[in-house]
Length: 205
Image 1 (spheres, rainbow, N blue to C red):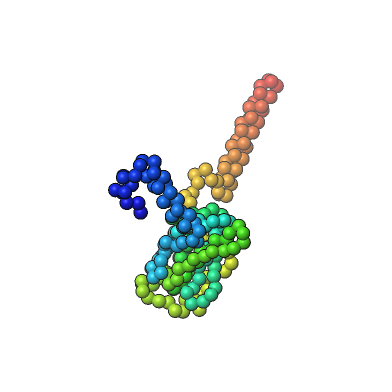
Image 2: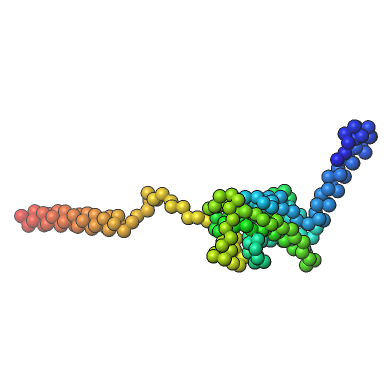
């Protein structure tokens, strides 16, 4: 960091150039070093929908992909692909309610346009939706397997019952309206018939 008294002693233009140059150097170093995961960290207890946050700003960024897996094996499951880099933001959301409690790990892989890859990962993440924090579930990986393939929990939504639409017409209402219409039409024809009959009788007199 730039020492403030030193900066004040420099000429204004020199101080301005230094203040602009130092953050740029940090940004270039961060972009060249590879992706980063800030949240969650090793040993964290998580539940519900977890925002995996960090940075995927890498030189030559093409796309990034986030994976999760059990800490005890090498199987990985995709949480989706991201086409835009992020910096100090949520990379992807991880819905832990659809997997069993246990110890997991996550990995962020950035694919460069030249075909190379850079990655980072975090181990020992404790998913605790249905068991107390600190309690392991060693049989989880053997009894229930996470969904395979390139599934994206962000796209999975829980259906919520909607209130009844007052403009909606059900079958009973339709038949009742049809019956009332037929009765009304028959009544009109009856009245018209009586009217015409009375006129015919008056003309014959």
